[in-house]
Length: 297
Ligand SMILES: NC(=O)c1ccc[n+]([C@@H]2O[C@H](COP(=O)([O-])OP(=O)(O)OC[C@H]3O[C@@H](n4cnc5c(N)ncnc54)[C@H](OP(=O)(O)O)[C@@H]3O)[C@@H](O)[C@H]2O)c1
Image (cartoon, rainbow, N blue to C red; front, side, top):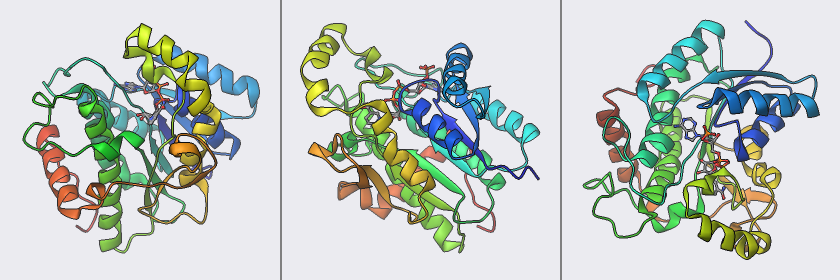
């Protein structure tokens, strides 16, 4: 068995994911950069190696909006590695206009939640049952104003433009909690933790109106957001800190939770509801035509 700890970071080619990959490489993890654009991922890999020449990084392709690609990635990963210590489900998209994947599922729910749901289900068997094995799911402040629209999962009847993004990020948080409850029920040591980066000016805004983004960059961004490096800190804390407990949710603790040092993040009452988590698990299995059962379940 490879003695070096192995981490996967999805969406590691830019923004928060790149900083998380760098932080993990610095903490002596061998990091698999699971990215949609291999070209961008190789450039990101070069950037990290430029700063940390001893880093061990590997680029592997995945498109989280396409379950065939997720399954191929998992198969290839299993053919190369015999264990996985850390899975950081970081990749995410934010769209201002409705968009669906090939299977007809709203793109943000498909990418941000369902792709990671299936990826986790396929890789969990490789994770040693120990407290340092972790699944870290990325949520957002946007989860607070949202709910899971079980009867309108594609958000076709929602009036707010950002309802699908909010729903997808709430799903990431609720999924992380439910995964931890299932670990607990089986007496497993492995942890499921969630985190959000606060606010940072990353590639996430590139699908928004350029005029709105320019306005934000001169006003909102300098006042309220923090650097991508700082935005990665709550995620790195969730991934690495020995004090972290399963089911915890980390984020910046400063101004409006947009920036500041990492600590326990606030969350909506809705996100704590266990019946919502169970329904989300069921609908995720239905929509992905897969089952996610932990060993001995
Ligand atoms: N920025 C913020 O203020 C903020 C706030 C709250 C939460 N978040 C969360 O933080 C996480 C990282 O976002 P970010 O801010 O770093 O944005 P980003 O710079 O746009 O990074 C997103 C990453 O996800 C990847 N990705 C998108 N669609 C994908 C797909 N179908 N398959 C595989 N990878 C895909 C992107 O790859 P490509 O380069 O190929 O597109 C990119 O590497 C996301 O989960 C986001 O929801 C961000």
